[in-house]
Image (cartoon, rainbow, N blue to C red; front, side):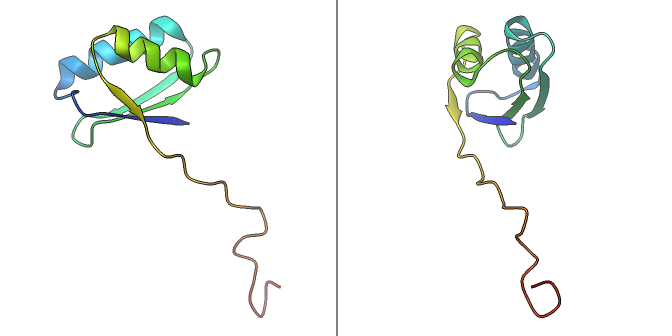
Length: 84
C-alpha cells in the first residue's frame, strides 16, 4: 500500500477528484481516502508510485509520499521464553 499525505485535500469533492485521477491512471487500484487526516492510500495494480503521484498532481493537488513502515520479519514477536 502506498500512502500519500495531501494537505490541500479538504473535502469530499477533493477526495472524489483524487480518486478519479488515480483510477484514470490505474483502473483496478484500490483507493482509500481519509479526508480528515489528509491521507490517500493506494494499492496499485499497474501503476508505480511516480505515476500515482503525477496523477494527483495533475488533478491539482500537492501529494507527499508518506514514510512507509518497515516490514516486520516473519520471526518478529516469537522471541521470549515460549516462542524462542
